[in-house]
Image (cartoon, rainbow, N blue to C red):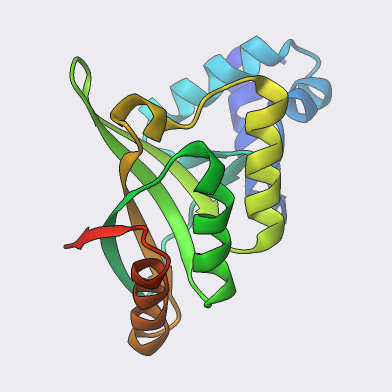
Length: 174
C-alpha cells in the first residue's frame, strides 16, 4: 500500500476503534515503522483530521452535535508530588481534564490534550510519564498550569472547581 492508502487505512482504523490505538499497533497493522505512523498522523492533522494523542494512543475527536456538558478553564499550581491528587480530585467529583496549557518563556503557549475521564485514565497518564522519563508540562512553569475541565452539568462542574479550591490547587478561574 502506498502512503496515501496507508493514511486512509489509519483513518479507518481510528474511526472504527472503541479505545485509543497506539502508534506501535498502527505500525504493525500497516507494516511500517512507528516513526512512519507518527509522520502520517502529523500529515492527517495538517489535512484537518482531528487526531488526538493520549497516553494510551491515538483517538479521533468527534465533536458532539449538541454540547452535553459544562466546561471552564482553571489555573492550578502544584508540584509533581501532588499531580495525581489533582487528577483524582477532578475525576472523583465527576469531572474530566480535557487539556493542560502552560505559558513558556520562549515558546509561548503550549497546550496538550489529556482526555482524563477516570482514575484509570489518570493512572495510565501517570504510568506513561514514569515509564518514558518525561516531565509534566507544569515543570516548565514552577507548577503553574491551566486545565480545561468538563462535567455533565454545571452543578457537577461547580463541585469539581470547589474540590480543587478546597485542596489548594486553584489559583483562579476564567
